[in-house]
Length: 149
Image 1 (tube, rainbow, N blue to C red):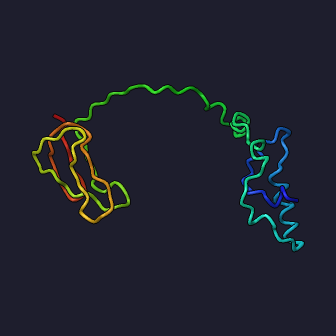
Image 2 (tube, rainbow, N blue to C red):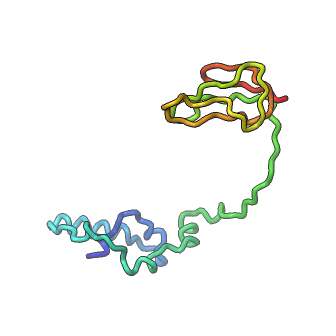
Image 3 (cartoon, rainbow, N blue to C red):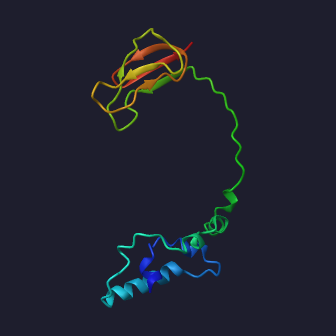
């Protein structure tokens, strides 16, 4: 009874069960029957982790296999990729906060990492930086365009 009432209904145990049972579904049915019978869950105010927590962990390789993800669990070494961009358009609104205001003008030379848009004082947002070395070719309220030099 305690196991069913303490179940969080994530159903991870269904995937991890070594004998392919569905303990999460069983616990959910038991929990529903107990609630229908009028039993109040005495574990709602439990504040300490179960002493058996360490032994209830799901073996990750088994979970990966049961989810059908094993074929994707391959080494994926990172490789350095260099790309040259002749032109970039950098939006001044890149997030939920306030849009950046341009601090560059057409014809300005910028280097990678230079601030090209700042957030107005008192507003929440993030400054915008140049992603390439180049010359600013266009500035609008929405974007700044930089041509590579």
